[in-house]
Amino acid sequence: MLNQRFSKTTSLLLIATMTLAFAGTVSAVTPNEKGENGLPLFLNDGMGNDTLELITFFLFFVGYIAMGAAFIFFMSERNSVAPQYRTTMTISALIVGIAAFHYYYMRGVYADYGNVSIEYRYMDWIITVPLMALKFPSLVGKDAITENKFLGMGFTGICFTGALIMIGFGYLGESGALGEVMGASAGGWAGLILGGVGWAMIIVATGTPWTSGKGVDNSKIAPELLWSANALRWFIVVGWIIYPIGYLWSPGAELGLGAGNQELLAVFYNIADIINKIGFGIVAWMGAKKATEALASK
Image (cartoon, rainbow, N blue to C red; front, side, top):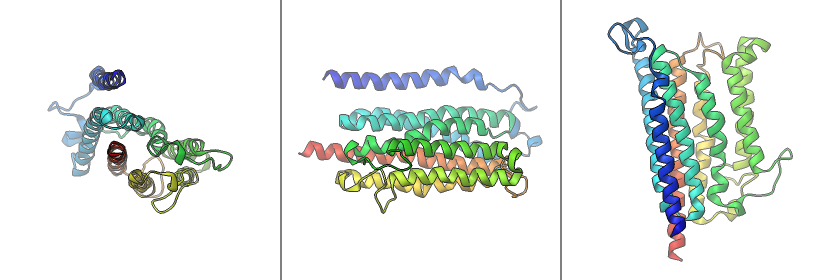
């Protein structure tokens, strides 16, 4: 009974903290400039006001609202699963909660100045992508995590190193840092390819929907959790493909697709984040619920 009360109190405190933090950040994105009609700059005719700009703003807005709503949902559902799966729910909530903060700022930057911020984007990813990899051990249990090594690293090491490589080289490619060393287009392609190596490392550790991973043994995953584990793999193997498609349109990467298109970049990234971050949490929650029901029936 005491543990249940503590768990409920923790959930309520996290939700309250999230709410207060959002309230405290309002002034941080208060626009310094407005159009003549009082609307954000990008909604004025002088900024073009085309359909793609409106879609981009819409997705930024939907992104932070959806992530915030998912945070509340995952924290509210945390107490409806068995204690061993509550860490999974907490991680799910942290992923979307952190993303909600960054989407709040990205929406503000775009609405006020018409710019798509890659800095806020990568600040979000450098935190949330490693957390997404941690879903596996927290959901399937430590017994299903193997002691196999890859390049001298275990499951956690592979996932964290892969995430750092993927996000680090992606940012260096999009920011133009690699382009300054290798030449504009070459630097952009190097960022994409080397970032893909990090992605491949995560797949090696977690496995695919058809195979066990280097760090995960399918035979030791409870039957009621195997569907969710494979669904998480689908997101990593297939859902994450949306990100490199968006990268192709990055103005900073200069991949030879004209001058790039920051709106197309944002649309692909926003759709990918909404699908993968929220979807990741939903399938983990479904697996935790099934496993909880199985435990209750024994």
